[in-house]
Length: 412
Image (tube, rainbow, N blue to C red; front, side, top):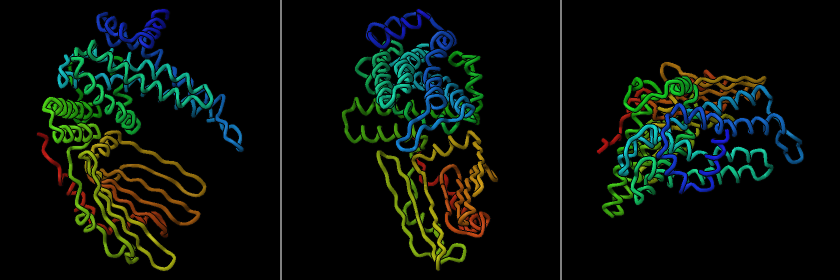
């Protein structure tokens, strides 16, 4: 324990002198997990459990709200497991990107970079117990993590100091996306993560099946590696247009996209029928938006007659279509019910379906994901959920799904 406290103190107070020591010392991934990560990663989940289930959250004028102990423990355990998994995945990505920024691949050194740079965030988990300041402490911990990573990459991954900034920026983008993605793929990857922690495989000692969650994640890291190399080359060229395009490629890869151009507004409007469930269309709009090379398209329509109305939305996730695929890997299913209705998420005939129904006012929504790209939602009043599903079936879903690869550009 004394060694752990010394390491935490040194990496937080004197990181510039501690990183050379960390990089030079012999270590294994399993050893770092056992002696460092397993202890520090528990701080946040344990403090969250104490804060939410024991201390409770004070709500002005309403009193103190406490999460049930059983739910609190479940959340804490899951959060802890995800933290252990995430740090390993991040180390894989750091390792994969090393050559793109002049560094050297080394699975143990990349794990050192990920684990020790995360120290600030893990220690900041204590901030949850401090009223009002907890969020600020959490943010400060995250920012300091990125600074620690910037300082550590030249030592652990042998990245040239003048390229460490670009290397760090890409990892920061990946880390932010990863924090969101892991929440989506919990059910699909948690078992694989547990296996990883037990086996701690060496670099190139094997691979996951291509169709497994981490097999697809491995393909994603290769996309990130290629995009990172393009950005590095663009920075060397000094061409601002090339740099903008390269940054867009990094964003697209990080978001799981395939450099996809979303369908034009007119193409999307072509899937919006003139009538729906017997109601005439009274409003329709369509648009396509893009930022930094990532495009998303959307068409909306309202159908009304008398007091009844139905809304239709068709979204082409385009440049972030990969995120829909991430969710698909996990086979996530969820169902909850109250006295007034229910909510359900499941797979039907290979498609993700989400449905909600409110019995108190006979209204709900029915959503289907087509080809891991298009999201079609019908929402409004109906006799029952089957009526909304029938309304959605009036669209040519098969034709829309067939366009899943439309606009996908080849990676250069």
